[in-house]
Length: 284
Image 1 (cartoon, rainbow, N blue to C red):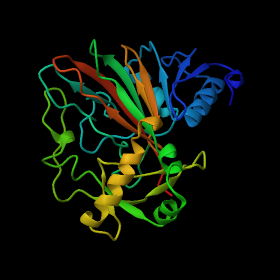
Image 2: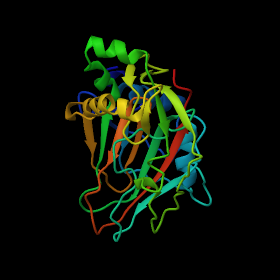
Image 3: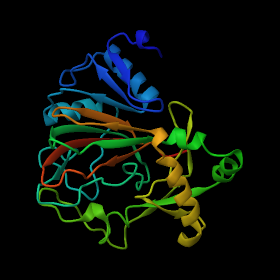
């Protein structure tokens, strides 16, 4: 869709593969059907969309999320007491490890993974704290026909066992976040290595370093060389965009075809974000 085809918003692409800033909408207000349709079109076209200068209460944040579907309550991280669907993602100035500081796709460790995530910047550092995004459509398109044929028949095991286990970054004790350390009982789920997007019909890689443990029917040792190769392709700079946050910025990304990485380059400064995650459908 060309820029002129949007009726209610202006869309400014950030890179050739993904990412666009959207102007002309106030997310604190109920969206008309025409506004939502334009935003939804931009979301499917650009895979991650950004809004500036948004003033959202928790209720308004939840309301925008519910326009897309039901909202997830995270199984291992406690949400706001008044809004359990909202994660308060906070790194205090004295802390060294951030939350989300590695390439991943949110909630791929669930039987029914997430559709998308909506992140609102409450407090950002003066310098640093950007987020990187990577197109998994681009990663898939870059592979050879022979490797594509091999991957089409594979499934992979996803789990929170490592990332939220005792040695995982996401389970680290934080001053302003309450994360659970999971034990041996954490479930594992199989998803196709190649995901066909349920709305666009495009194919993309669906593995990620945080939650993909191995290929189904393979050992971890057997899986590691091929997974590492796919991870290397999936985070190539040519398939990425980078977003610099400001107070009030909002990002929404499509976890079905996008990875993201929260940079941890603002030691001694505070960063406070709020996230809701929209439930998706079973991976086909």
